[in-house]
Image (tube, helix red, strand yellow):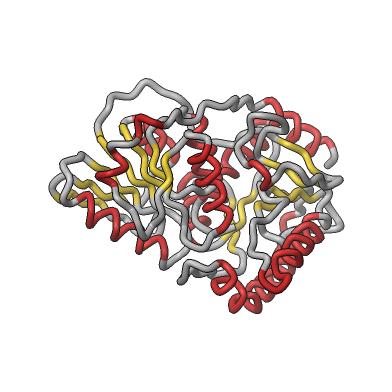
Length: 344
């Protein structure tokens, strides 16, 4: 799904494992997510799916999503048609969909990858209850539902994917493209941006406004795979995007990480055992707000809201937080992929 870059990046371990076990992999997405996959896997066939074009203009999830439901439903119908055509054209034997509800087939084994079987949505006028019911109904269309998390404690997703069991659920472990390395420190702060517009741009503007007056060596990664920006302005270096290898090294070369609290970002931070992190959830994205608050309450990561972002204050508080250090054993994913490929 092209909703920020996190859905694409967390698919990379799945792509890599499928290829390692001998599968021929085709990649399908749209927008920046597709551009990123094309850059990471230049030798694989990439295919374009209909765009959802979700925008987050306000800090209220209901008001953000409700007016866009007609185009979301239309996109789901169009991607179902596109997937059926792709299956016929390329003789596809199996399908793995990261949060694209129209990408399934009754003709071949289909997997849905998500960390949200229990949506965090407002209860306004019964909308929350309906959304949860419908989310689970759509997931049941798939043969399997893979949860990128640990089944027991400790886990990363909390009640988003624990406490409600679907019959086709399977936990496949923490999925991260990042690996611990020995890297020399080059930056005091790295800000990794992503997510739907216009909130991504608002976040970027706030960060630049504050860091331009502070004495920290900073790298800003804009998360824009459709450009080639590289600039240096006093203490701030700005890049449009980084490949997984370069981003891996840049995060490890930075003392402090500023980022959204998207689930894929959190899995990357867990894989790298990062401690000094400032989480700023996308306004109105209740899943990110829940995750940031959960980790903040556990004294794992510092949380600030976008409207009240105060980087100078945050830098004085970071030593109070423990950071993430979780088991990222890949055996669960290896076995899930092995079973999936055997079924084909």
